[in-house]
Length: 155
Image (cartoon, rainbow, N blue to C red; front, side):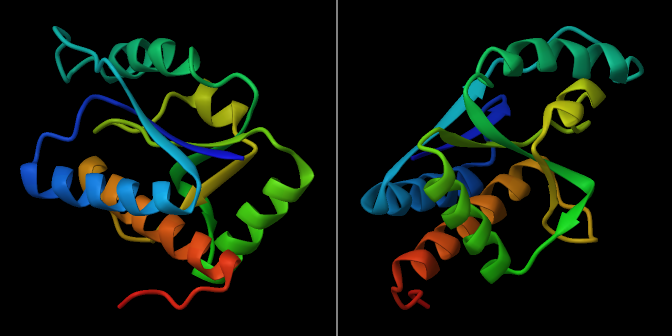
């Protein structure tokens, strides 16, 4: 099984980028994991959110083949860390295909991407920036993999 974290654009905040890379490195010590950053929509005004999300969706869709897709959404299911670990473990046993965590840009994800999701997941009832969401997701998946493997989570 491979864990794929997919989102538009690079994390620009250097502090969040460093945390993101740290958690990715930790995940790679435990199994196959990678981040795919597609090009973000440029040259469009924020007053055209549908066009921005559509352009980003076109680029993200190219990486969605053969995988269990988990889309992050504020309307998604909330889970405990233990429930997320059980979900990942179950998917790893059911299929050797990838688990793809799909995070939208600053406007979120186009509805057609959400419709393709095997699961819509909410990390919190609060709203986080899309860059901070990436770090929180990586940390929670790292925590889940530690739980699956029976390791004590490093504090």
